[in-house]
View 1 (cartoon, rainbow, N blue to C red):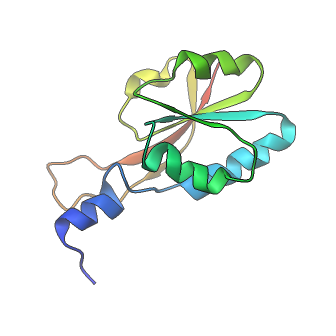
View 2 (tube, rainbow, N blue to C red):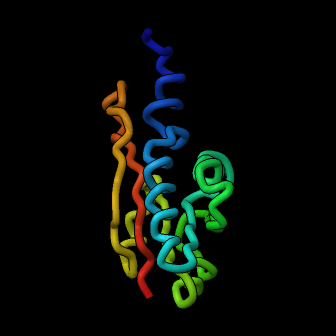
Length: 126
């Protein structure tokens, strides 16, 4: 059934669409078998980090929200943890000292004036 455009954007296309969170959580839980894991997110409330926290709830993997960059707290964690960062694809400047691990494109926008959204998981490098 077709959704109203505003609902479609929110659920399928925009920042609030939670594509890939389950797969990212599974990846991080698997990595935890090799030692401590910490994950930061672009965003400090709402879909990121809260959507990811739902999948990591009982895993013991800390999720740290950030405003629009990999924070110093997350970078400092690299020395003691396997450290990752989840982006809504809106902060391309984080590629310095980060390696893209996987990405999940969101639905193509109904309104072609908007770019297609994407969720990206990065490994934060020392």
